[in-house]
Length: 101
Image (cartoon, rainbow, N blue to C red; front, top):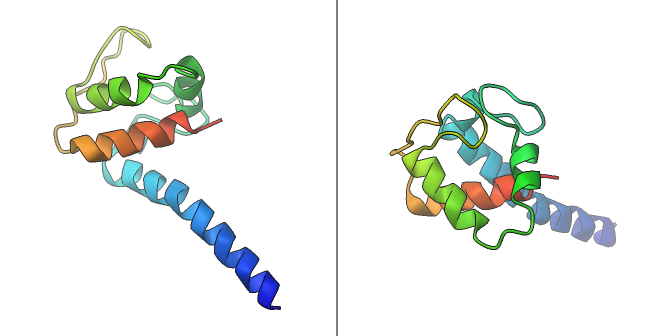
């Protein structure tokens, strides 16, 4: 019984950051245009992760794009600037997006 509780606690601890980052994405309205596994207005987070896989500068580049917006990478629809997102939040969101498989 004790072992089962330890395993459950470990699983909750490991899963919590993923839920927290998804919650942050929802709270910052990212999910209005993006989804984890399908294209909406913008690309899916899985597609973004695949495109930037192995790019050591991707977290910082995507964090900048989250805050300042951008266009042309995924088609004609531009991503608007999200000035309500802090730099720390943008980096957290970027790392989460890049972790999607």
